[in-house]
Image 1 (tube, one colour):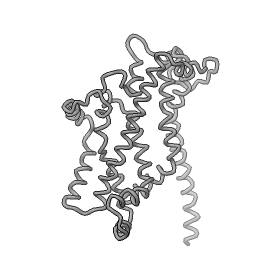
Image 2 (image 1 turned 180 degrees about the vertical axis):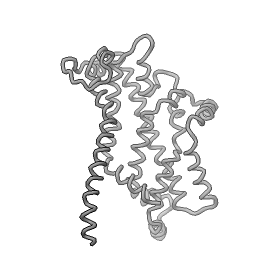
Image 3 (image 1 turned 135 degrees about the vertical axis):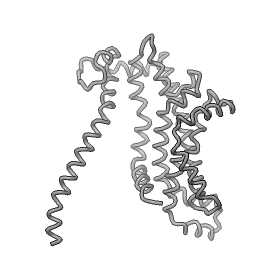
Image 4 (image 1 turned 90 degrees about the vertical axis):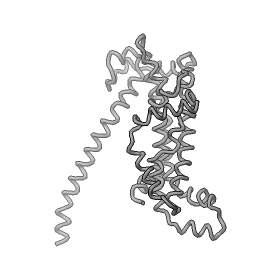
Length: 289
């Protein structure tokens, strides 16, 4: 009887698998279309982009490497572009490193120790995730003015150092680790700081990789808050700088499209390097806690 049920359910499972695969394939094509169209546009002159728009028309007669050669030529536009690129790299790297370690230690304290108002503190952390950034933007901006951090990298980075979603993810991951590790380390004479850094932190590499790539993507693509804080063009990040290429008096599509494609490279490389850890960390964080 059970064998007959298994045989009858097998075609249903195959049909469901085929439908799911087809759905996600179509979804992937929809997501990848603008990236592929942008890549093709980066090999065409700016006037072709105005005439054709973002299309996947493979007209090889109009495609060349002129945009990328111009981008790396060392002219005024090229120098501005790589200045913005450097600014984004500095802000992104510093923000990710500081955010990961701050959020890790906050989550470590909440998940590994019992203290008064522990649950209330964690509830407040979760509650901040429900407040849209647009509501917090004006008070944060006034605070940055009061701290005299306008037009500084610190003013851009400081609001993300204690990220609620990153704390939540680390807390869920660390809650799944056995507490016996802490007791064994204490018996061996390890300090509390040593336990958190030498024992627990290496076990949290998948969580660091997962949150690192998500934090890097958020910082690299951020435009609204850096646009409010940064005033001088020499401190602009890449998204803001590329946006300045579109003006009422003329649009530099040659640098804009090629620069946008080249701007994808850091996040793409990070994802390829840490792909295994990212998948492990997202899976573990989803089922633990």
